[in-house]
Image (tube, rainbow, N blue to C red; front, side, top):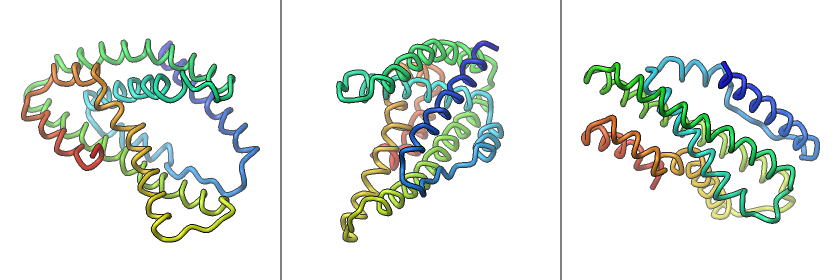
Length: 205
């Protein structure tokens, strides 16, 4: 219950930040993923896969703070403060996620685990689908407000760079996290790990 309360608090916190930022942004920005569609996609997967994705998210959130926010002296102090306390709570959540994930793993038969690995691959692919759609929309917004024109090669470079950045933040930084890899490889076979690696190859390349 406390875990859920904190996650709801985080959602409300970032909605408030989004509203504050929106007040100073040019009109036209769009956030395309629909929360209910995302929730339905996630809830249709096995508990093992959902817990794996959740643990992955908690860990890449921490990596993002350490690598991009903590040491940047030019960022807003309020912005850094918000993410500092978010990072502290996510650090606790990652411990809980790992415990729950391991508990769920202990219940699975080999056949169920094989299917759960497939579900995890499909969840990460769904995340990547969201990133592709949103990164394209974000570049469209940037092009509309940048105040200058770009040639086709520059636009292509912008789109590629934005997608690679989003993939790094929301997928690669988590799946390459040492702690995440240690947990995951301790649960699955080498063949299953190879399946995951092959599926992730185009995303993390």
